[in-house]
Structures are given as C-alpha cells and as structure tokens.
Length: 101
Ligand SMILES: [Zn+2]
Ligand SMILES: [Zn+2]
Image (cartoon, rainbow, N blue to C red; front, side, top):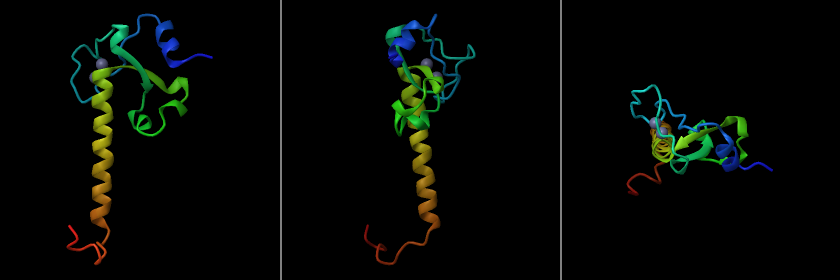
C-alpha cells in the first residue's frame, strides 16, 4: 500500500506545486520550496482538504509546502464563510432570532 508520504518521497525532486493558490505571489512562476521536510502531500484542491483529505485519490493529490497549504486552506475557509454569511443574509431572518444577539 502506498502512502502519500511514500509517494512524495518517491517523487523526483519534489517541489511545492503552488502557483499562487496561497494568495502569495510566487515570482518564479511557482513556489520554490523543495526541501522534503518542508513539503507535504495534500489534495490539489484545498477545498477538499477541509472535508476528507484521505478520500481524495492520489492523482488529485499535490505537493505543498506547509506555508502555501496553510494559507490556501485559510483562503478557502474564508470563502466558504463568506458564502455562508451571504446566503444567510439573503434569507429572511426568522423573527424569533431577531434581537437574540
Ligand atoms: Zn509553497
Ligand atoms: Zn504558494
């Protein structure tokens, strides 16, 4: 059985695959973190990571450095929260909740 870690270690010259998903500008066209101890395997789509990372197939996994992944996941969470707040404000507030805060 191959674990994501074995996959990462078996890769030739592993490198963070982030090209800006973390919201930072990577001037070299992508993140330049290459040291295995700085890298991790996580779903290419950070939104999936918020749910069940291990259910994502290996082909949809990517190499991330901790910084990029952390920031990318935070951006996704912020977006999810924003969407939730927007949809919540669209709905009419039940009168029972009015003034509860
Ligand atoms: Zn990175
Ligand atoms: Zn990045």
